[in-house]
Length: 317
Image (cartoon, rainbow, N blue to C red):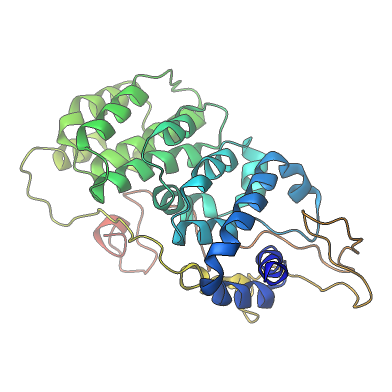
């Protein structure tokens, strides 16, 4: 049984889409034996990211992260935070579009009951700015789910807004804009003054978060809004269902990562074994990407569906 469980973990860490897909659909009955192995693999990846980044056959750990979220493995929460706090080049290469497409959900679904790790990501000036924004969004998501008191989240946002932020630093501006977006999503009218201050300090990209007057109008207590731009996805309950639409699993999609299996007479190497391995003979493997995952649109960006409406008034609503 243990060997079968270990094989499933290896398959989830395989660059072969067919193996990953089969493993994601087969894991449910093996949660009890798989969970410790999954956490061990994530721990090793978090402690030795260079092993993943230097390998042509080891994929991103994102499928393990989705499974940890579906199983509500709170012990995975600090490991998710560790990935998101890697230096931006490493974080980008290891996690790819997961940073903006899935990290907020995984942080919320593995939440252990305190904001320590989430706050640490948001306040880490050396982290990827989108990862920092993801942490701010995760706090909003936990509030929306009713598991975090409103006062606790708003106090967190107030502390963050008071942290050293440089208007000449593009990363700081991006994170501050993410903060304004989260405040607007929550309709946190209590923080109108905070939002005003951020705009006055030139810390908000209006192309991303919207103009100041629009933000303040949406934060007016009792304001009647044309449409609600709040979009809080439900918790992850099935990792395969969450990722099956990725181009990684679609052999016909032009954006799919190219992977060539090694010759049959070679042995695959995983992080937990010392077997020899042969790198792919052709194009190197690239981290899996969600299906057509574009950069996160700003609140005033035109909707990608071509309707001519703003994203927040159309499909982003």
